[in-house]
Amino acid sequence: MAFCEIQLSTGLVISPDTCELVTHTREAEATDHPVEDGSSIADHVIVKPKTFTLTTNWTPRPWDDSFKPGGANRPQQAFDILAMACQDKTSVWIQVDDIDYQPVIIQRVTMQREFADGDSRTIQLDCKQITVVQGKTVAVKLASSLKAKGKPKRKKINLEIDNTTAYWFDSA
Image (cartoon, rainbow, N blue to C red):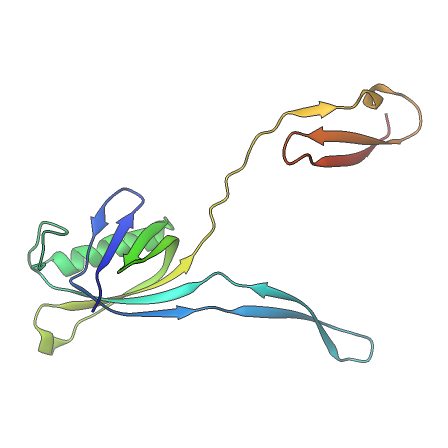
C-alpha cells in the first residue's frame, strides 16, 4: 500500500486511505502506407502519451486528517469530485509515494463496492499524462522589400523567437 494524494486544478487536495495498485502503459504506433505492389511500409513511429491506472480505497472515516468532512458519504463525495474532474477535462496532479504525475487528465473513473468490506469503496482512475502548450504573441519585423511593387517576390520575416526565419510570396 502506498501514500497517494490527488490535487485538482481548483487547489482541492484529496487523499484515499490506500493506493493499492498503479499500472503503467507506454505505447508506440507505427504508421504504415501501402505501396504499388500492395505491401505496407512503416515509415514513422508515434509515441503515445503515458497512461496509467490507479486503484484506490476509500472509507467513511479517513485514517488521517485528509479530505474532511469524513462520514458515510466520503467515498461517494470523492467519486463525485473525481468524476467532475473527468467530465470537465481539467488537469490534476497525482502523487503516489515519491512519484509525481503531472499534469494528467482523468479519462475514466469507476467505483466498486465489495459488500464484505462494509462501507469502503474502491475507486479506479484511468489517467493520461498530457503536455500543456501555451501560445505566445511575437513581434514581427518586416523586411523593406515588402514595399516593392511588380513581380511576386519571396518575402522574408525575421521572427524574434529562436532566430526563426519565415518566407512567403506576395503578389503586390
